[in-house]
Length: 217
Image (cartoon, rainbow, N blue to C red; front, top):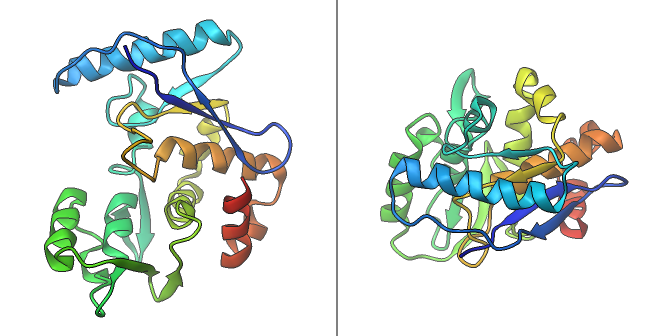
């Protein structure tokens, strides 16, 4: 048995409500089919708890094409005219102690390739900041920089972000909050709350105000 979080945008104001699911049967193994069974099981217990919920799995294991497209490994943003995945830019923007990073020349590479490269280059050094196209981002709030990247990608893909607004709950079956920090489902929920608030453009234009909004959400 297992539980997983579901992230829901606040109905009023800016922020995300994290709701742990009821327990559901976990299908072990690394096969794609097993992971999709876990998505179905998770959504069944969430739907039973709230029949009015409209829930989207955001990961490469989603049963819905929109959810697959919104995975950070698939969702892209343009940098200097080149499509780069959110995950690649996130990894390549890391700055480590001793002046190691960022690695903007890696933005357009495969996400997993970038991750392995950055791990090798940092060699256990402490992460101290992010640098995205020359703009420094602090480590706090812990999800601030990832949220900003993800939301920028959504902003650049209006066909996807409009579809996202049809949902009020988001999951990521691969995300375990006990071991990980950044979650694409939580970023999507935060984006929906920003759009509903009417403050999306205002906060995207101000790094410090954006970070403050994430910190109190």
